[in-house]
Image (cartoon, rainbow, N blue to C red; front, side, top):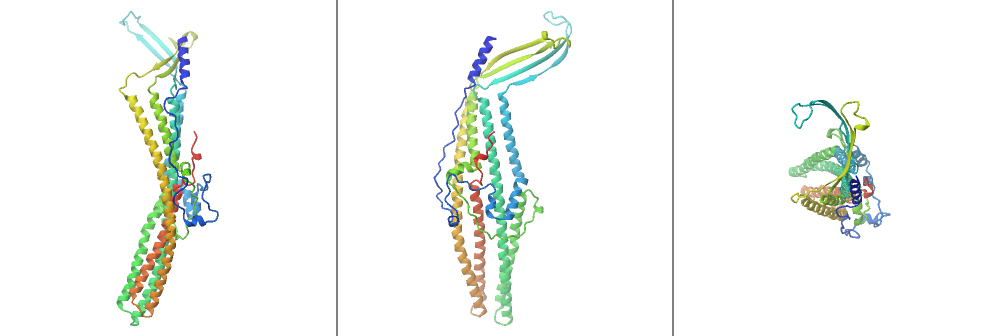
Length: 478
C-alpha cells in the first residue's frame, strides 16, 4: 500500500512536465504600407485619409457600401439559405464537439459489469475439485485513470481547440467568398442590363437611320446597297441584343443557387448598372494578419501542428495509470451485497514500449514535417493576401484612369457619328461613313459599360482581400 502511494505521488509530480516545443506565431514580413496607391477618387473623397493601424471601418455587412437595395436584399439571404454555408457551419460544430471529446481524457473512466451466473463443476474436474452446483453473483466497479504526465491529453485538447478556431476561420472564409461571389454575379447581371439598354437605344437609332436611308433611296438619292448596309447594322445589333439574354439567365440562375432558391423561383427585374464604385478603407498590410479569416485559419493550423509534435514526443515516455476495482461478490442473492462480500484492489501501473522498429521516431519526424508545412502554408497565405490587395488597388486606380479616358472617347465617337449623319443627309458622303461611325460609337459605349463592370468587380475583390470586415476577435475561445 505504501509503495502504491509513493508511485502515485511521483506520477502527480510528473504531471507538470510537458513534452514538445512551446508554440510561437511564425514571423512573416509586413511592409508599413501598400506600395500601390489607391484610386484618385479615394483621395478626393471627403473625410478619407490614409488608414492607421487602429482603424477598422469596414463592417461585416460591407455590401451596404454600394448603396444598392437589390444587392442588400440578396446578400441577407445567403446566411439564411445557402447550403454550402450550412455545410461549413456543420463542420465547425463537429470540430467544436471534439474539444469535449479530448477533454474527457482529463477525468477517470468508471465502469460497472454486474453479472449473475449459475455454474456446474464436473465430477471429473482435475485437482480434486468438488462436483456440484453453485451460483456466482458479482458487482465489480472499475476506475481507470491515465495520468497526463507528459502533457499528451492537454495538448490534444489544445489541438482540438485550435482546429475548432481554424474551422471557424474556414467558415468565415466560405461566408466571405459566397457574399463576394454573389456581389460579383449581381454586378455582372446589372452590367448585362446596361449592355442591353445600350443595344436597345442603339437599335432605335439604327431604325431611324434605316428609315432615313430608305426614304433617300425612294427619292433616288441613295443606292440599294446603302439601304442594305443600314439594315445589316440594325439586324446585327438586334442579334447582339438577343444574345445578352443567354449570359443574363446564367448569372440569374447562379444568384438563385447562392441564395438558396431554385433557378425558376427567382426573377430579377432589369436594373442597368449606373453607380460608381464606393470608397473603401484600405488600412495597412499588418492588419491583414488580424482581418483575413483564411490567414487566421492557417495560423491556427500551425499552432495545432505544433501540438501534434508534443503528442508524438509524449509517446516516447511511459504511460502512467491508476486503477481501482471495488464491489461485491457472493454465491447467492442473500449474501451478495453484504459487507463480508466486499472486494477491492487499487494500485498504479506503468506501461512502456520497449521496441517498435522506429514507429514513434517516424511519427515524431512526420509531425515536425507537418508543422513545417503548416508554417509555409501560413506564410504563403499572408504573401498572397498582400498580393491580392496590391493587385486590386492597382486595378481600381488604372481602371479609374481608363474610365475617364473612355468617357472622352465616347463623347468624341458620338460627335463623329453626328457629323457623319449630317454629312450623309447633305449628300456629301456615302452611308459607309455612317456605318463606320456607328460601329465606333457602339464599340466605345460598350467598352465604357464594361470598364464600369470591371471597376465594381475589383471593388468587391478588394473588400474580399481586406477580409470583409472580419477580425480575429470573432474566433471562438473555447
